[in-house]
Image (cartoon, rainbow, N blue to C red; front, top):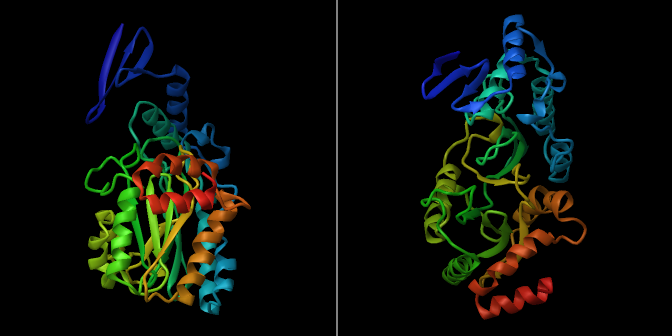
Length: 342
């Protein structure tokens, strides 16, 4: 016997001799039975008690940044600590909110056949945002990797007056040619050397990431709107530049444009987040104490403690760095060889 039906636009299901297929992919009959049973029962359970929950969401056992400790180190106000506690309570309520098991089972079925749905709000939930200081903010956001797989909590810090630059190279995570404005470390070296030559008051701290490069401006303090022309000068990812100059929606993110930086791993790949590799200083640069404090407290120290280890060096990052050596100048080759023992 052959039975077929159209479930939704672009999706079909059919049964051949009692075996169901969705979009030509065979589906376990027990999954169908479990879905039907839970849909009819209207069952709701805590996520931890939902069977196969790990296929859609991987909880974090430990976060990169403790916002209360960070705020304390930044000398923040009592109002900031109250806002942090309010945000953390909201996250606990979010984590304890019961899940519609029928909707979850349908998500599970559809994800197995290549449709990334979120009917049960497991793979994507309201983000948690909070201030850490007047010029620094923190966000936890449940996201899945663009390559698929379970979602998890991603962490971001946002700084109001400490510029950050971001460059992506083409890879499975970055396939939009508009966003991938550079090809290798040699391109970043050329852009940043020209930049500090044109802006001698600048000082850049440059990092290698699994998908490209990032840099913090450690001398000049300016907001994203003031930095706008320099995004173009540095050929930064245009999507990053655009988002940086937008006003965030959350009241806990200060209501001003900010420079965002991810400080936790993306699921589904080897991810050390950000490996410091070099610094460039203009002839008239003078380090900003506030920028140094913010980058150390909210970016460098948390990433080192979580991903780089006591040595501050990721073997995976160094393996990737070795592949980039032919693209850089002889001067930088010598510097990197001396620093990392390549």
